[in-house]
Picture (cartoon, rainbow, N blue to C red):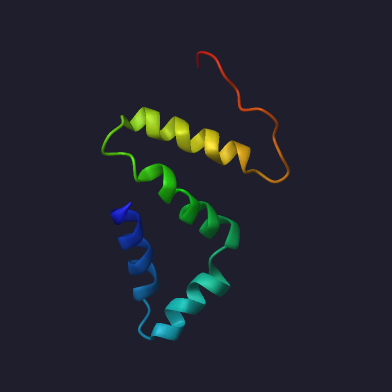
Length: 79
């Protein structure tokens, strides 16, 4: 999760003026993408204790249930 926060702050800090860094998130970054990025912190914070596959599956399940319009139940069974 720390890496994601660092990347997030670095993205805004790439602009020469603080207000322009804020504008980047408000005006040029799709709100839906920004929200998905921030919501992924809850899943990614457990990566130290779980395999990459397990974390990825949890993220996909979590994202599936939060889609608008709803997509129904997540798929299950062998891939």
